[in-house]
Length: 555
Ligand code: FAD
Ligand code: SIN
Image (tube, rainbow, N blue to C red):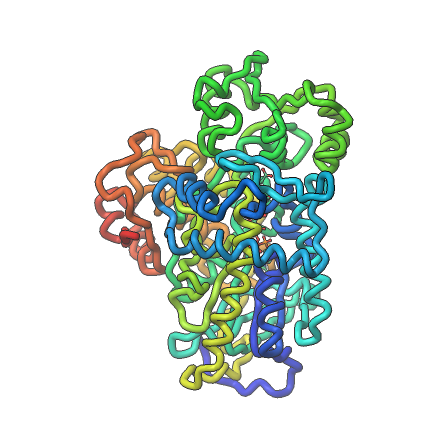
């Protein structure tokens, strides 16, 4: 923290006991829980409905059908995670999930039914039909609608939209608030709080192709790292196999539920190919389908494969996938008559800010839930539709842990600081921010994507180190701050991917294709110093050096 402490009495600083950064499923569920114990301030950059939660299609996995059992959901999740889940976290997820969903139904959530009973769908790597959905393919939208309505009923919750969190405020090693930028007025304020909850979502935007909304720039991960928190498993990025591939469209997601209903994958020659890669065919685990598509694209020298639902009834498709049907039609593809061009896209970050099963991070006063967190439920590969459930379960849990922390008397008092007290120098403008953002996204796609090698990762590290120097300044606008955060997160993904010299789950090293080499069960853990050392020396972390710098911690 720079500068002397200035009392901050004249400006109207928003007051709250708890700060929740982000308003997706995790943030909303946390805020509702926190509001039972104090005043809650929810900060959202941009529009409150721009979140991955709002765009979630396939549904929410929960062991509630007659044919299902939490023990089977547990096993499926552990299997998909390739031995790198933390079993106690998965147990919490699957056991508390049904109660969280019942609660949501009590608040008004309308999940689709057939014949008066909930319709449970099938998705890849689930051994039971257990995915609840809403309005066919608008599950996230329905969950956010209900959570927002419930949050509005609690007068202790105040929302500040279009407020970008720049950094966390740390006092004597404890998180005591956040530095926040009002995007409209461009003024910056320090907001103190007894506990801070990070629910800022993922970082798909660091890749050129992503299903994620533009807001998914990894801010929470970058600011937690700067504040001194530990990150875990950053090498594990899930690529969704089927995003729309059209030069004129963003990579709009074509839900896995389409394959769950019988959708087929064909290469550019029209051949069905998945049976050659896995007994599960198009419903093989997500990492296997994504790499199979990658391999077909390479062998046929094409930029996409096709998803084919033309053999299904048109009436069924329009009713079951209304959003997908109408979105593709907007791009002149009638999916009931034509094959859909698709290719993989960055979709979900399994790694993130390390938390225990209560949602506590390694920094006192800071809690995290949802995609920003690495709670241990996903391991090396997330089971489809587990993350909306994770947001509900761990959103609520992290709130309870924050309440308990705030009730302790021996934590430092929230700071009376102005934004200026935190500045390390004058605020700057980043030249060519858009160009840098797009170069970064292409670099990550090309060198740190679905298939990585030591050489590609080393080249990416060298470039990222150069860019890190360019952005090592305080910036004044959301756009510039996001680029800085994206470079920071990209660096973490790349460093962890270089360190992990085996191929497991979503992390595939062409130079180390074996799954089980010595130490493969370790988790990569990163702290600020791990990256500082590398950039100070301006060396490419070699695998040996990397494994000393990164802490590979056993489960
Ligand atoms: P998000 O919902 O992403 O919310 C993040 C919030 O943080 C936003 O409000 C954002 O504005 C805010 N924020 C970020 N940075 C800042 C900052 N600096 N300052 C202030 N606010 C900030 N999962 C499933 O389980 N089932 C599905 O069917 C499914 N489908 C998906 C489809 C798509 C297209 C995508 C992209 C993801 C899908 N997922 C699905 C994954 C799932 O939606 C997400 O992992 C989950 O919703 C993340 O929730 P969250 O609350 O952690 O974050
Ligand atoms: C999908 O609908 O395919 C996305 C589901 C998920 O990512 O969990």
